[in-house]
Length: 321
Image 1 (cartoon, rainbow, N blue to C red):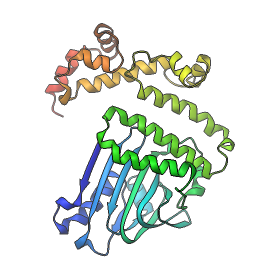
Image 2: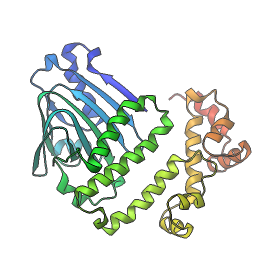
Image 3: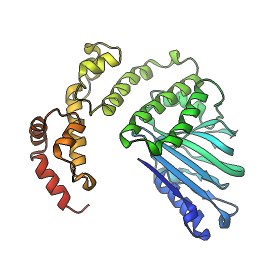
Image 4: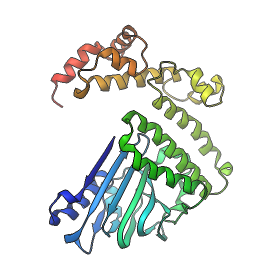
């Protein structure tokens, strides 16, 4: 999903307050100040990428401060990788301080921080990554916090170009395409940060061990609608044996096949409750989530939820949301 909001539709005296409330509620609690609230302008664009979130923010100069109290009030537990596309950002966190213009900078929502946009208007593209989704050790990543990171060459330039293209083109993407783009963004961010930490091949064994399961989970999420999605297909696409795939899921509550079935049923269950999809045939929803026949879908749905898809849809549409 892509959404775009701007302060220009508001009265001048309300724009900065709106910006403060929006950032604190949609991103994280934080204190913001500006020298000229009467002439403040801002626009924000959000792109829901499933595994990550991408925000594009353009605004008048602001000063930000996130205190321990703010962290206690609300912490999404994200690592934020920001590309400065316009203006200059001074940022400090965990004893590090940098001035960034045109580069990338990593921050952690679980730690206090201070920032200031100097000069004129500031523009940033911010990739918000759940900490557990990044297969790199937190203790190693701490060294990179609030450090200016180059986006001019190598993996930094590739990541920067991808984020810019994603913001520009995501409004024209089908919502079902965006999770796959999120997986690509996460892979690029991981490669970039690993490079900043040294040779990616020297990453800790536990970090490398996490990477394949996370890729497998993302692959499953992105291909639930493919009726040919099977453990064998997943193993082949990840260049691992079927035995190795099952071993990766050995400590998980569900087998690979059971996870695919559960996620398909959950997705169909959610679609059947959506009012905007009420005119779509149940068979079409079943097919969208990889069920080859309406009979197989209805039987699996009833076994899992205790009622038929038709009954679930009827109850959902009469229940106030």
